[in-house]
Amino acid sequence: MQGEVQPKPPRSPAVATRKFRILIVDDDRDSVDLLAEWLTMGGYEVTHARDGQEALRRIQTDRPDLVLLDLLIPPPDGMQVMRTIKRDRLLSTIPVVVMTVKRDVKSKVECLKSGADDFIVKPFHFDELDAVLRSSLKKRYLYTSLERANQQLRDANERLLKLTVTDERTNLLNDRYLRRRLSEEFKRAQRYGTPLSVAMLDLDHFKQVNDKYGHDCGDQVLREFAKLLTENARTTDIVGRYGGEEFLIVLPNTDGIRAAIVAERIRKAADEHIYKYKEFLVRLTVSAGVASSPANTQVRDENDLLKAADQALYRAKQVSRNRVIVDRASMPPDVLEGDLSSIFKASYEDNLGRDRDRDES
Image (cartoon, rainbow, N blue to C red):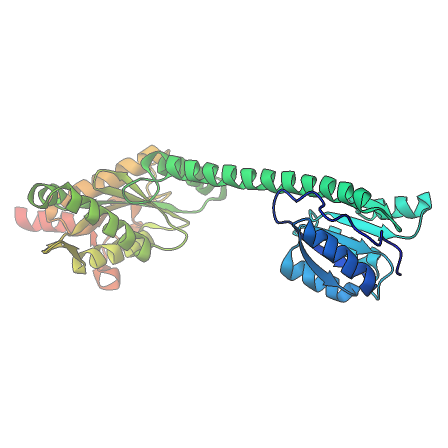
């Protein structure tokens, strides 16, 4: 109704410290025009909603810094609008200043319990409204500043965490975090009686790449191989750089045969990949050693598992490189005499033994 606010606002109210956005929710056009004129003079951005539905729609889309809310509006009424705002996690921090003709304490208490940040009774003076708005907006500004600072802190913590667990050259997990994850997975496998395998991979003749093309080329090869590694590993596998040109894959709930399938897929992808550095085309193969628990009964902890995989990798390097060898003790006894290369095209320690027997004969 007319006359609910001071009819002649001050000519120059104090200018807001920044361009705050205020949504006026009121169905009295004269009051809204008067308020909007005064707030605009004060440096605020002003929008207007005539009923509860329009108010909620504008709050969702415009995200004002403050809502100046009349309680007696077409449905949903002001009280329902306020409760809806305060129940929404993303909107609840927007201050709501209630405008009402009700002067009784009960009405004020009800508004405050419903989430109102402040309460002003019509008719009011513009100086009074200015003080209420500035107080609520100051709280809003401090809250949003704190939120920004907290977000910056969370971002910084995430970057710091990433630095502590990832390798800077490849963005894979680093060796320290890999060992921690392996220890966790080993304990989990022992507890639940599930298989656990590791595959240790080493780029063949990597030193020659550094010597011939330089360390920048070597770094690019490491980065590209890391990408190739993650693309060919499974989503459940834990992949990281173990050190130098060595990489490690931890394969939870995976026996030696299935781990060899993954390692062979990586070996084949590496064999077919061409690294492009400046005008050079570089080809590089990879060798892998696989070990699995509990198939290998000599494995008592994660260090034993790593040692078995490392020994298998060493034998792969000795034989011819560019192959996958599975630790003999990690293979099921019933398949040791069978040739499984047609299934997943991997080399086994068993095959190595047969080659050695044939050479000796």
